[in-house]
Image (cartoon, rainbow, N blue to C red; front, side, top):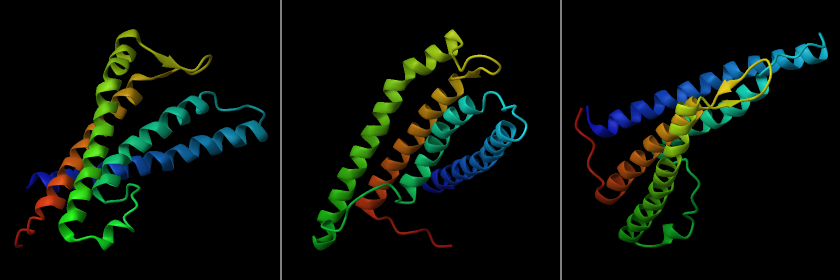
Length: 165
């Protein structure tokens, strides 16, 4: 198995995991809404869970968005240029994307470590949600996205032939 197909499988798995978590999250939200409006008894902690989960879902899907070329880009002008210029422009854009996620990775490490060591929590009252899973998932998602950008740089510049099946 090549590193490209391994990255594809990991990215797809993380995307499916994020979609499943988003689906499960809807049940928490509906239970809270019904609890508030029908039984006058909200489900405590839903706000904190949703707040952390949205961030987790975004970073779980970031690697897949990079690999499936779904990240935002405006290539309407670049398409009129020669092939070599298009590949160089794509590589430059991928380098900028990798740099962005690398900055998140490097800049977020201390906060994630602090959240783990200090036992940082989000929320007050009945349910306190630990923040370290969210912070470390941001780092993991950023690492996957950064790695996928490097794969995209390789694929766009060298355009290797797919292996014969």
